[in-house]
Amino acid sequence: MMDRAYQEFEKRQQDRGISLNGIKEKLKMLQIETPSWGYSDQGTRFRTFKQPGAARTVDERLQDAAKVNEVTGLCPSVAIHIPWDKVDDYSQLSNRAASLGITIGAVNPNLFQDDDYMLGSVCNHDSRVRSKAVAHLIECVDVARAVKSRDISLWFADGTNYPGQADLRRRKGYMEEALAEMYRSMDPHMRMLIEYKFFEPAFYHTDLADWGMAYQLAHKLGPQAEVLVDTGHHAQGTNVEHIVAYLLDERRLGGFHFNARKYADDDLIVGSMNPYELFLIFHQILSAERDQAHPLVQENARNIAYMIDQSHNIEPKIPAMIRSVLNVQYQYAKALLVNWDFLAEAQDRGDVLAAEAVVREAFEQDPTPLLHAVREEMGIAPNPMKAYLESGYAEKLLQLR
Image (cartoon, rainbow, N blue to C red; front, side, top):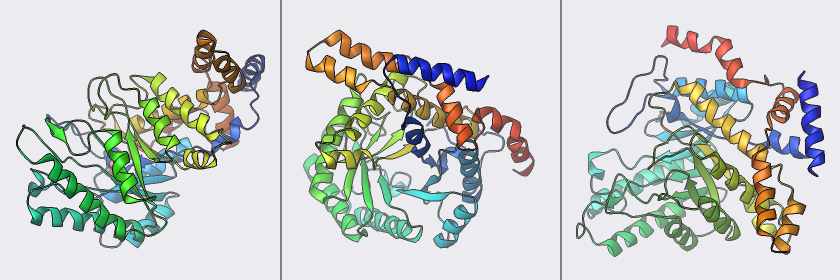
């Protein structure tokens, strides 16, 4: 039945002028990093609801991440958060991950939970607090070195709640000084991924409020600094795919924190609110990958870190993570089905409706038969969620935890 479904899907794509040659291989190469913190209890500032079987230790978080990779074939690395995942021996942590068939991915410093950081971390008016924050950043570089990680992912809660609370330009200088010191401590292969957020937890201003500020800071620091786009960190109505295209053209798009939002930074399951936006993000990335006239843009597009970052407040942790990962894969598969020749022709003749139709038609395809075929070739169950639910892993966790 599935073979027939795939054959019918392949025929439909051929009728659209799409060859599946190479598309399967690109799907097999897709990698999506999951976050260790997504497997533990977490919530909103109102309440954290305890989930039965949720991971309590870094080792349990690694086990759960390995299970998600096992059933999806998409998640060979797990991001860690320091000090949430702090251990005495990071080489041992790296070896433990390897024994589970995964690796340690991005290292995320925590600069928002200590009482000292109430008025900011690297932008704090108190030099003692700033020094403490910089020391933690450099500590995380050392952690990345120990676990052989390429990326250190930075998000700052720094900001103010009221006009006049602080000198905004002085705080900008503090931020630049802190990240420059961290940058100098990095190894040549490492990348600093600078994330931005236009509000929350600060409500009057945040010190890195948008992609332009993050880009300018990365540009000042040097080629090892790039921008990280969190899909929930924008004002309503922001054209995120335009930001993606711009950063690609500047060769400064380092990675994504994928989640979904309805109103603010809701950290919902990826693709649950605006799947078209996710599709259009991949459309811009794949367009850049095809740009043979600009090899540096192509290189940037091929070296983006795709990471999940969300808060499973009311959802069971592992199924929610699987759903997010599969939603990313689903939209990526649809973006691979754009007829680029037809699109270029329509754009060149200024045919607005035809160009829009080419993109929308790809979005309206159902790539499920294609994904089933790819998973079977990878030795993965065609339906990863079903495979997980039938594996008995969740029941085992209830007994062990």
